[in-house]
Image 1 (cartoon, rainbow, N blue to C red):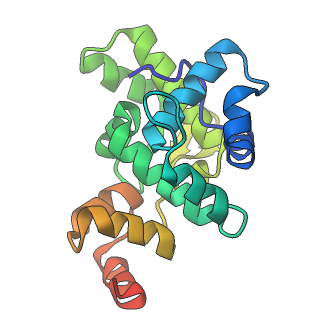
Image 2: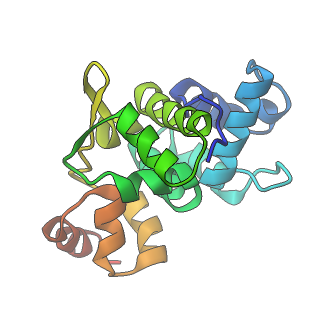
Length: 195
């Protein structure tokens, strides 16, 4: 659960990686703990393999990001929600439209058997991701001191819909759980994108 120390996925790190790719993997300005956290994010997003080699998705992101960063971030969210224990916990434990406090999520993880420090580090990484990346705009917006709101998407990009459709087809539930879109919006996307 504590794969990222307390570090969130940060916009500046992510963009530096996408614009540098192999060069960034060889040389960057992150400290040792930050590098380990970022490597784990890259693994969970499926941008590097376990040996640290770039994946085809990394090159795809690198091409698409300058033209449509929102679409790339939506696929980042999808992959984190499928591959990271922390993000899986979040989308299962926190319904869309709800407000929550960090301490509540830490308590839920402790109740699941995680040590308090592990739980705190994980939730700090989650909230730091929301504060330091565009993901907070949709999935964990801070609304007042210590309180976050989980909103969800109003629109899913074609790129993100295509990636999700490859995994889920026309099974609505994963789209609702992961992206927060309702069935009516999902039906609209099926008509709009005609997969």
